[in-house]
Amino acid sequence: MTDQKVFSGKLAIVTGATRGIGRAIAIELGRRGADVAFNYAKSAESAETLKAELESLGVELPLFSVMSRTRRQRLRWSSR
Image (cartoon, rainbow, N blue to C red; front, top):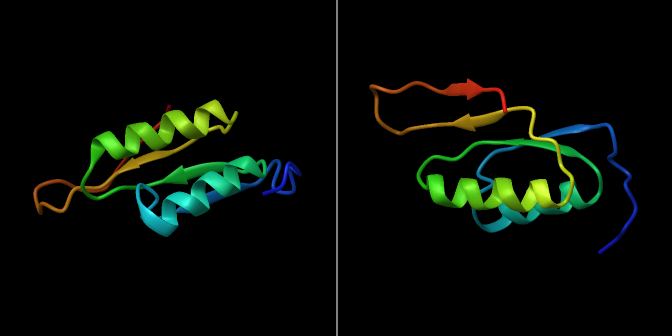
């Protein structure tokens, strides 16, 4: 891992960031200085955990998306 902030001032959008490879990518981008927006489909708890971890790295989360798989709910974006 590197301490270089090569993505400082950049925004990364990571889909599927609450688990597996997506989570690892979101965290590494945060470590390297990127602000991160991400979405999740199932686990609000996992999303909140990731959000807290990214915030502890000093990452700004300008957009936090919430996606439900039910047809009644649409993609919802909210400011932090």
